[in-house]
Structures are given as C-alpha cells and as structure tokens.
Image (tube, rainbow, N blue to C red; front, top):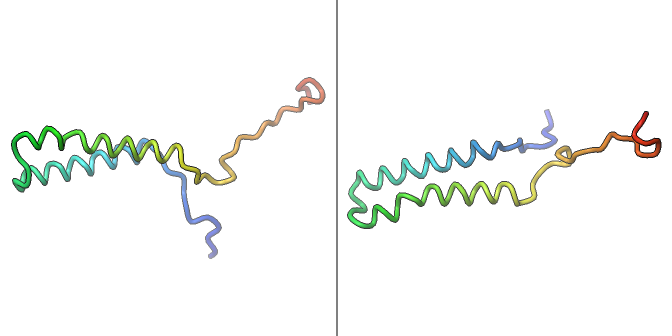
Length: 83
C-alpha cells in the first residue's frame, strides 16, 4: 500500500482546545509540585490560552493544504451561467 499523502486535514478547533487542555494540565502539575507559587501563578495561568491561540493562528495562516482544498467554480459564464 502506497501512501499518496500521509497528512490528513486538521480540525483547528480540536487542535486549539487540545493544546489549551494540555497547557492547563502542565500548569496544574507545576502548581501541585510547588514549582511556582505566589504571584508567579497569575502569570502562568494565561500561558495555555496564548499558546493555543498561537497554534490556531499558525494553523490557519501557514500554507500546507493539499491541492484538493481549492474551491472550483462550476458555473459556465460563457452562456450567462446557464448550461
């Protein structure tokens, strides 16, 4: 079996929320392990949202789509759109 295209389309919403969830788990584990405390926690809480938003922006702006992602126009303009 030959793989023509090993990449599959990415659902950007799932990507963003997955990164946010993973980030909150890391923040929670960091706080539970007493690696940060006090005023440092208030700067650590927004980091997952920022990273998830950055990943979403990169996923929407970087080229990487397949040629099948292009939209085609099936309208025949030579006859006023009538086939």
